[in-house]
Length: 86
Image (cartoon, rainbow, N blue to C red; front, side, top):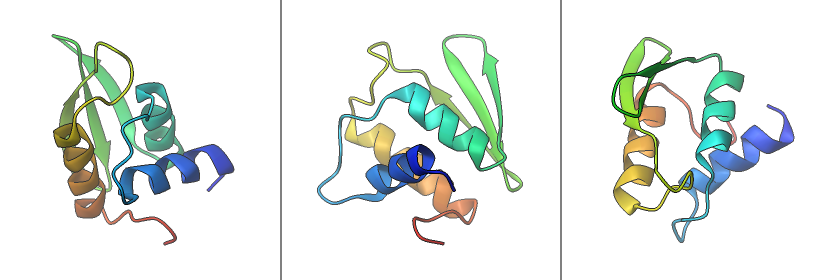
């Protein structure tokens, strides 16, 4: 994985939880991992990765601003078999 997507993945799983992650970096990371990312109605993006699908709300601030958003992203990535370093 190239540097920027790998860094975004590490931030998502980091402790303490990072709250300064840009949504465009998350989308770029998903695309780098081979995910399909589709904008759907209502300010949401549907992500399909390794047979898993989830629809995420696009943050108005363009930066993840909720711990719940980060936890949802972590859970989705784990279910899709993606973790930092492997």
